[in-house]
Amino acid sequence: MKYITLSTLNRLVSEALSAELEETYWIIAEISEMRIAANGHCYMELIEKDETTGKLQAKASAHIWKFALKLIKSDFEKQTGQRLSTGLKILIAVEPTFHELYGYSLNIIDIDPTYTLGDISRHRQEIIRQLEADGVLTLNKELPLKRPTLRIAVVSSSTAAGYEDFIHQLKNTSFRFVTKLFPAVMQGEDIEDSIIAALDDIAAQASAWDCVCILRGGGAVSDLQGFESYKLAANVAQFPLPVLTGIGHERDETVLDIVAHTHLKTPTATAAFLIDQAQAEIETIKDLEAYIYNNIAKTISQRQAEFEKLSYRVSAYSSQFCNRASNTLSQIYERIKLKGRNRIAKEHTRNEILADSIPRLVKFALERSRNLIALTEQKIKMASPERILSLGYSITSHNGHILTDIAKLNEGDMIETHVANGKIISRIEQTTKTDS
Image 1 (cartoon, helix red, strand yellow):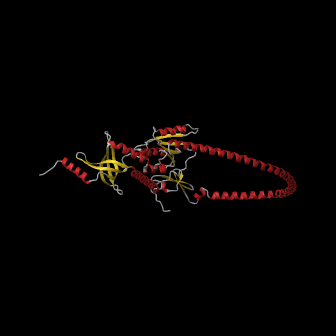
Image 2 (tube, helix red, strand yellow):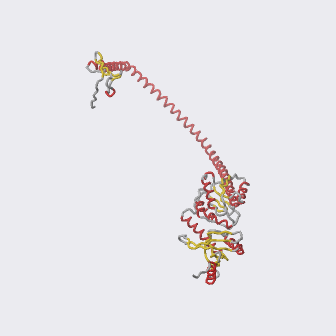
Image 3 (tube, one colour):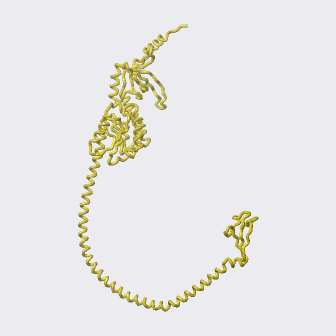
């Protein structure tokens, strides 16, 4: 039987690849794993997924040798503003290789940053379209910013220079800003979950704050990739308080900035915005004070002139009124005297008539009362127990109480039956209840 060694077969495969394949191919792939070894070489795993289902379709190992890594990585990050990291889709020039010992691998010799920029832009537009379709894209922008805005919940890293600048700037004003830091990771892969956790803590005490400031400032532009997140953007868009962002540099705008209530370039710019808001409130109050003062002075002047006119009219009218009232009172006085004399005469005549009628009316009333009393006495006699008993009726009692219901009696109970000339004592042997 003819055979060859594994190394021989691998060498044949390597030679066949070198003979049949072109030296370099440009391919599109996604970085699923990436590490830079201690020797300075960069090792990756590249994958390809189905655009519709997300199902894995291809996978290959790749590497960038140390001598090329610095140049390729620096150029890529400078042009895209993104770190070369897992999750990125890249357009790369590769040399397919097959090593007898290490097997199949792709040697990356170049990366086209423009493709990644386009993919990042497409990814951002997809997030924005999804937020718009969900109806939440502008929700936070529609919230009113409380006036004045003095109670500030801050989401940032406690060691960030931008946060320190922000606090320092607010403290060096005459306004009494109240701030509290809700710590979060502002770079790396944990940005999304860390900021959302901080926002959840703020939401639990939302009534204590006027707005939220998410601050980063400084650092590499590539670190902004963590803010290009649908989950984080949706959380901020639907947050119950206005959210102000100051997370990048002058030329950077993330999806988070787009959905926030107010996008400011840096933490310093954010502090300046809050100070300007407070100063604007002071200016508004001063303008209102001047407006009120001027209007009060004008109103007082107008009212004083009106009062002087009214005072003159009142003086003239009061004199005329007093004269008319005096004449009217004199006329009323004469009428009262005349009517008083007539009334006294009528009452005198009425009293004389009543004096003649009172004895007769009293006699009639007394006679009527005597008849009523006699009739009442007759009714009482007719209803007396003695008369009722004399007619043959009897009264039965049990334990001193008039008996009206046999249900209150038991066998062996003693009862008393009262008749006209005495009483009968009986023992209960049996009771029979009749239908009523």
